[in-house]
Length: 397
Image (cartoon, rainbow, N blue to C red):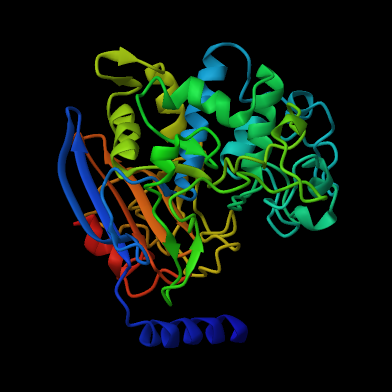
C-alpha cells in the first residue's frame, strides 16, 4: 500500500512539473449524417513547420483494437471464425494458462481481455520470421492467479493472437485483410504499420512527441519508414518471409493503425448506424451489439481498472468492456471513466502510446460522436477530474 501512495505522489509531482501544451490537438464531431465540426491546433511535424489537419494519419494506439474487431466480426459472419471456439484450434497449437491447463481460452476472451494473458513477457518485439508462440511460452506471459474468463486484465498481447487467428483462417496478411474487410469498404485511407498506405498519405504522417517535445514515433521526414515491421533477427526486411498464422504482431493490430481523425469518424458513424453507413451494410446489427455489450463490468476483485503496460496507474479508467469496446460513465464506486462529466454511457475506445492520448466515443442514444487526439502528452493521464487527462476532458467538450 505504501508503494501505491509513493506512485501517486510521484504522479502529482509530475503533473506540477509538466506545464507544456500539447504539440497538436485534433477534435472531430459527427452524427449519423457525417462530420459536424472540426477543431485543430498545433503541428503534425514541428521540424517541418507543418500544421496538423483532420486529414493527417496518426498512429491511433489502442483504438486499433476496436477497428481490428470489426474485421473479426466480418469473419464471424462469414462463418470463418467462432467467438466461443477454443483458440487452440484456431491457432493450430495449444493455448493454455499453465496454472489452468483444462480451461479453454476462446476468441471472445482474447477480444475482451479475459484470457488471463499479461504483457509481462512483451507483445510487440517478435521479429519478421519469428513466431509469436515463443512469447506465449514464457511463464511471465500468464496471470497464474486467475483462470481464463474470470478476471479482466487489459493486455495488448491478446490482439497479436487475434490477428494470427485471422490470418490462419483466411491465409491473408493481417494488414491486407483489414484493408479488404474494413478500410476499403468504408472508404478510409488508412493502414496498419504503413506498408499499404500511399506515399502521399505517408508524407502527411503526424509525428508523435513525448511530453518534452522529443519525436518518438513516425518522425519519417515525409517518407514511409524503411521497414514497416520489426526487422528479422539479421536486420533484413523482406516481407516475403511472412507466413500466415505465425506472427500476428508484425502489423501491430493492438495499436499500429495509421488513420486520420476524419477516417476514425467513419468508424464512429458505423457504430451509430448499427453496422450501416451511407445506406450500405457492412455488419449485422447483432455483430455491433455483440461488440458493445460489456463482457465484463467492474466489481471489487474481478479485474484491474487500469492498464499496467502504459504506466498509467490511475484507478477506475476501465470499468466496462465488451469486444474491444469500452463503455463510459460506469455508475459504480471506484469508477472514474467519464471524461464528459455528464453520466452518458458512451461506447468506443481510448488510445495512449508514444505521447499520444486519443478517444473515439459515440452516444448511440442521441446519435452523436466525437474523435480526438493530442500529441506531446505525458505517459500518465494527469490533471483531469476523471481518470482521463485534463486535455482530454477539454477535448470532450
